[in-house]
Image (cartoon, rainbow, N blue to C red; front, top):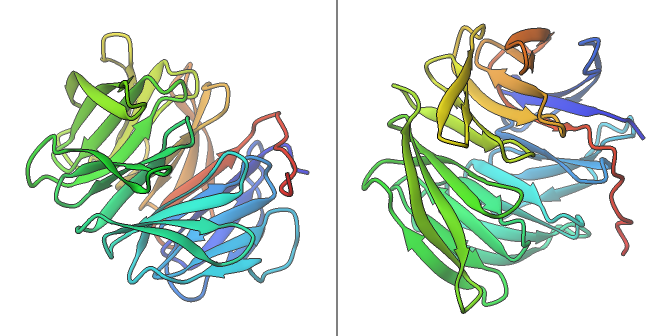
Amino acid sequence: MSSVVLATAGYDHTIRFWEATSGCCYRTLQYTESQVNKLEITADKTRIAAAGNPQIRVFDVNSNDPNPLLTYDGHAGNVTAIGFHKDGKWMYSGGDDGTVRVWDTRSPVCQRTYESRAPVNSVVLHPNQGELVSGDQTGHIRVWDLTASACSCELVPEIGTAVRSLTVALDGTMIVAANNNGTCYVWRMMRGASMTTHFEPLHKLKAHTNIILKCLISPDCQQLATTSADKTVKLWNLDGFVLDRTLLGHTRWVWDCVFSVDAAYLVTASSDATARLWDLTSGDAIRTYSGHHKAVVCCALNDSAIEGRDADG
């Protein structure tokens, strides 16, 4: 099993796998039906999910088979968010059709559908594995309680301004929402008596002057990365929300980012048809992944040393 799985995809209908250190592309998968909007790798590094329009395809990471293991149909329009339960037993997604969906990873079956009533831009799974949080085009953030199968909380940080990206700290203490105005809203996440999550406003951060396309809290919960249509990536210290550094080098919109497991490196994906690997100590781009011939809008990285549990657990 590969020690590091790095993949990128976008508008050229391909998914590319890279040797992270050398920058060599060692495998290319064709995604003929549409562009790829999002990628997610399972914790055990065996499968990668690609969100397209309107289907989701899951591929084997360690095989050379170009065909998907499974194809998930159900969304009408672009699938804009995707992720896995930590044990890989189910998958979740969100889409332009205004729905958040939960899928069985062993068969292409939609187990649950939640109606957001507006195009969904981002869905994240709470570290408790029991709640999904979605952000949509009308600015609504909703918490979906998977046990009760209902919306347990709803808030609108800025009326009429699309929530573009959501990120939850791995320790479950904080959530950040980034919007089309370049603002990040930060809340403490509190567990109420009913065991559902409540939001306590903590900070409002004017991070960029243009659309924020992605926000992501680092695995060590020390930093927040924001990527923007202004072509920059910014790293914010979560202790005080001060700017640690700005990463410069992409020449077009920066759509996505992912931290290495030790939070020492960041991979970014851009409309300039490249992905980059940044050393966060120096702020330098130490590797450029070139090979796509259109916008790269998503990237996925799994460099964790911990092997996932058996899928049949």
